[in-house]
Amino acid sequence: MYLRRIDSRNFQPERVIVGQITEFLTKELEVAFLPETLEVINESHLHKGHQPQFDGEGETHFRIRIVAAAFQGMSRVERHRRINKIVESQMEHGLHAIAIEAHAPNEQSG
Image (tube, rainbow, N blue to C red):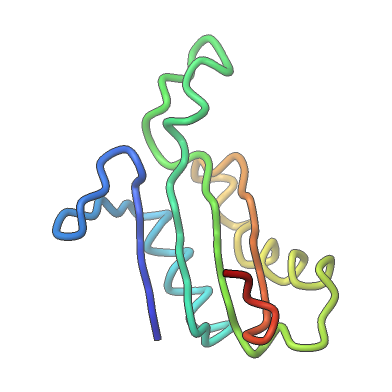
């Protein structure tokens, strides 16, 4: 399985910054879907200034890219619902938004 945890502000292959929400999402998505590939990307810094008090720090906005056989035959809506069910518990811990790119292996775009 290919797995990458990314904080895109400071990405260096040997220095990946991972927080508690990132760890939770990665672990739970791995268990639920047994993905072939999984990227949990912290994009919080991209939203700096969207709210006056938000400085772009922390773990508030994520992009999840996942390819898993478990998604075979599932609609896009159903895939998102299943991922959202895992993610929802983290909303009370500061998570604000996620972008989801979920595919079955034969749908993976290059």
